[in-house]
Each structure stands twice: as C-alpha cells, then as structure tokens.
Length: 348
Image (cartoon, rainbow, N blue to C red; front, side, top):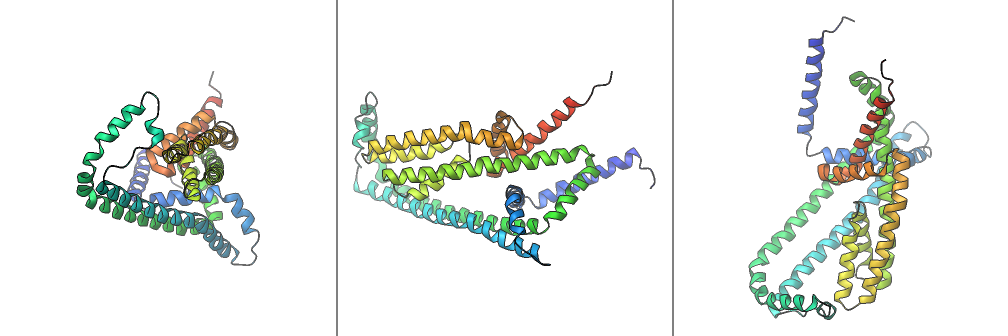
C-alpha cells in the first residue's frame, strides 16, 4: 500500500467530516428517532439476549427482532397514546370550563386559600379584582383556545409518527446488532485509533446505566404515586401517576406534578389528602434521588453522580428528552478520556 502524504490525510478527513455534516443535515428531522432507537437498543440489550435465546432456526434473528420490537412498541406506544388522548380530552374540558365559568360570572375563591395567614387577604383581593375582566378576555381568547387545542393535536400526531419511525429503526438495529457490534468499533479504530473503543464502551455502559437508573426508577416512582393518588381520592390517579413518572425522569421535576395534585386537592377542601400527597411525594423523591438512582447510575456508568447529574441536565437543555441518555454517555466518554490521559506515564 503506497504511503499517504499528510495533505492527502487532511483532505480525506475533511471529506469525511463534510459527508458526515451533510448527512446529519439531510437527516436532521430523523435524528431524534435514530438516537432513541440506539438508546433503546443499548438499554434493552441484556433483555434482548434472553429473548433471542428462545428462538431457533435460520430466521431466528428476524422473528426475535420483530417480536421484541412489537413488545417494546406495545409497552411504549399504548401508554403514550392513552395518556395523549386523556390529556387532550382534559385540556379541551379545562378550556370549556374556563369559558363557561367566565361567562357565568366570578368563580368562588377556595375557602382554604382565603384563610391562609398573612397572604390570605391579599390573595382574596387579587381574586376579587381579576375576574371582572374574565368574561371579555374569554370571549376574545375563545378562537385562540381552539387553535391551541388544534396545535396540541398536531404535535401529538407528529410525536406519534416519530415514535413509529423509532420502532422501525429499532427493528433493523436489533436485526443487524451483531454486525453493528463488529463494524462500529472497527470503523472507530480505523478513524481515531485503538483508544476510541474504550470510549464507545464507556458511552454504552453509561446509556445502559442511565436507562436503569432513570427510566426504571421513574416508573417505580410513578407507580407508587399512582397508588397514593388513588388512596387519597385524586382524579385520574393512573394518568397522574404516569405523568409523575415521566417528570421523574428529569431530576427534581416530579414535585411539579405531585405539588399540582396537592394544590388541586387543597382547592377542593381535602387539606389532609393534599398534605398526604406532599409528604408521600417528598419521601419517595428523596429516597429515589438520593439513594436508589445514584447507586444504580454510579455503579453502572463508573461516574461520580455529580457528573451524571450535569450530563442529564446539560443533555436535556442541548438535545431535549433524549439528552437524558446522551448527556451521561458523553460525560462518560469525556471522563474515560481524562482518566486515560492521567494514567498515561509522563516522559522523564
């Protein structure tokens, strides 16, 4: 093989970079689905190994990938579709109730809110001053409310189409998983040298640990809080539990949901139930975020939890919801790179 000059190497890597950028630009609308498919494939790899062992014959990989993707689709799509339909119905009902209460007159301030010490009279004065303009505002905002409902429906359908494309991609990732396991490290070594294989391994371990520590813990939080909501008599406890679980994937976001449920119960006069929701939610959140989740992620990703937390928050801000998993993977690669440099012996 003839020697390659430095200029030719620079030209080759420049061409590779341009092709990657052009491909990413062309597929920018599909990148979230591709990222979700990779995250799901890595996070469920151990489960898929057990599922694949059940099948025999030449087409075992096809049937295993098809059935396992269908199971993932049922587990993911059905709750999301149900939750989206219920959320849309509740949003329409809330908008209709707002318009009707605005036309009928001034709604009553909850008694418990008016009796709060120090701030109760101030809140009541604001409440009495504000509703005088509610009817006119509602009449003006009626088309906007209906337009908001329409946009919400469009966004739900768009997210559903992205999810369907994610499952299609996931099927092909499962189907060609063995080939990808060999080809991706090989291409990485050819482009960046042997050290890249360790970075890829650390990133995959971080994604797997984040799936276990974020998703599974969040599902457990949502299930526990759904039971709490049902016990205290909150409306739609299963839906509220699912929403709590979704918010629990983001650090410190679950209190937004169970705090809103507590306010709703308090506005209906169920002060004891509201306090119970707050206490139970605080205890569940404290145990999950301070003991269970850090232990799972730290042991799996080999990262201090501070870097995991920074990766999650930074990933969400940069990449959206999929950044929950991409952020820790990037931090794991960076920390692995740092450790390899620190461990490298210095020349005398």
